[in-house]
Image 1 (cartoon, helix red, strand yellow):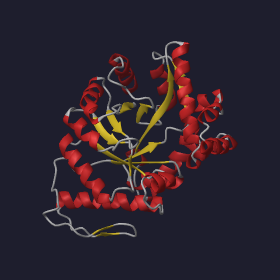
Image 2 (tube, rainbow, N blue to C red):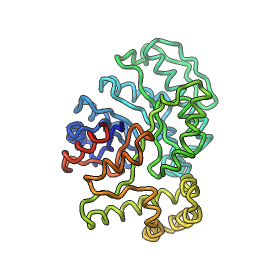
Image 3 (cartoon, rainbow, N blue to C red):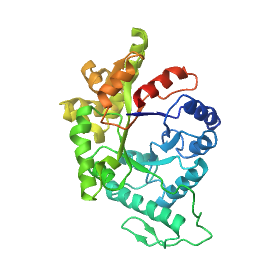
Image 4 (cartoon, rainbow, N blue to C red):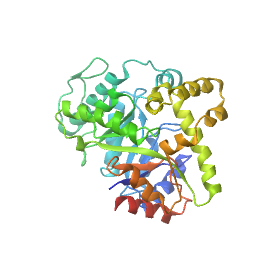
Length: 339
């Protein structure tokens, strides 16, 4: 069984209530926000108020621009407001974005994220049970909490933490400490089986955990359409997005596994000159077959199950559901994957 989620397609906060209602009515299991051009937390407050069933998660909130306590308090309030439907998804982003977009230092991202997760859970324990704040790590400290600043217990204190990542350290960290793992959209089945799953299992074994406790989720590139023209428009969009991701050195191992490391190097060089059309042209049809699914809408549920059943427990399409889309199409897709 695979649960179908979707991303939030709302350009303004004022659009969120209608989008959340539409997502829930269309039968999706979860609604995720991303930290791209908007804050990922603010929309979830509105979505929580205007929905009653759908899970609400960040996919992802960039970890380091906020302190662990800020993440903890935001998630705590959202969990209370939503009646226990929040998933806290964190990711490190890459060095360039941390330093040049967020304006913060980049230091030991893996160990630092580990401490952040530990401190967030220590804060939640303090909020819920009054446990003294005694966390002291290399990067973060939580050693002060007075009643005036403590938000106090809530009805559903168990908030799942998912992290996103590509490298072995992050995969092991997910197995060791987390409830779920966001596999990057630029993935192949081979990459997940050979590079991701063994590291998650190693982390779980080191912590004495059952690997089945960790939920795997991802966005899937799909070229879905019922006419050649419709598919061609999607194909060009997916080529561009794959080339954009593959130009980032951190994601190069996915291409290297398939013998396309030199292409990734060329994509990086083209990205530095802003040659986006030239980058997309380097993504071949063979690459599309590996990283994306091409299908009619009627055949898409079967194609998704064929590729991902037993691999991911949650899945969303890279192109999110929009309130103007035919809801019955998405409802059938969700029901078919869940069956």
